[in-house]
Image 1: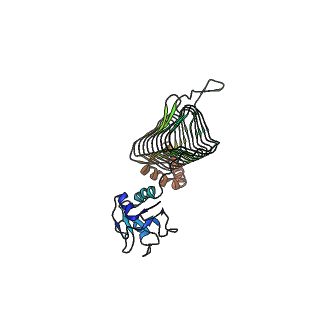
Image 2: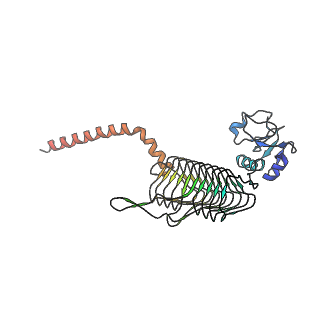
Length: 349
């Protein structure tokens, strides 16, 4: 396990300075770094506080921060290349074909090669699990699910029947995919459940955080696009369409039939009404609220409720502390106008 500095630099297609034969085994923060550690530095502010001699085996940083005597991999984007190097030093785990005796697999299910099944795993009839997948303890794969190769399902993940996963999908503990959407029709006295007969597709390289829930479509499909990343404790409702490379932070709630286009970034605790559309490249700030049916143009930053462009939101926010004073001034102005009107009426008599 591990790699030399020269091997890592070659993998990143970056130049390096120092001892290329130095063997590295792990990534590290600054405080816990030692001779087999790889660290990074991005930005000149921190660089002014760096020691002349590194305790780490190697640093990934920009050319202007490198110092004589350091083992340095020179990168224009240190944080990105550090993340890529982490995949080399800590490769994604894959299955080895270990089946716990307590796992229950339907005779009508199909398992690929080298699939790991932990204790109390259940795989339903007609389900297909791709090669090298890892199903941790307590995972439930419903009937007719489809799971691509190299997926990792952490403890207590539940896939309702018919759920489809692409390849290299990671689902953290407690994720529930494919539950019924929240749809009801009022008949005058009670709520009648609208059919929840659609499906759900999670495309390749998606990662979904712990205890997040994604509902199946009501009549159509719910879909999360390739490479999107969803944080813990997120709710995504029925028929929602999420594009590729989307980031969604914790405690966000997305209502039914929403469309989130490619490369959108959503900060924590944001809320989205039904049938909204957020166009490509938009950034939604923390606790922002997008009202039902709203369309937000792409490549802009939005904040507040209702969500509005950041510059407009800042102008409104700057006025809020002055509201009491403005209210007092408005009352005084109204009194003065009333007084002038009375004086004008009296002078005309």
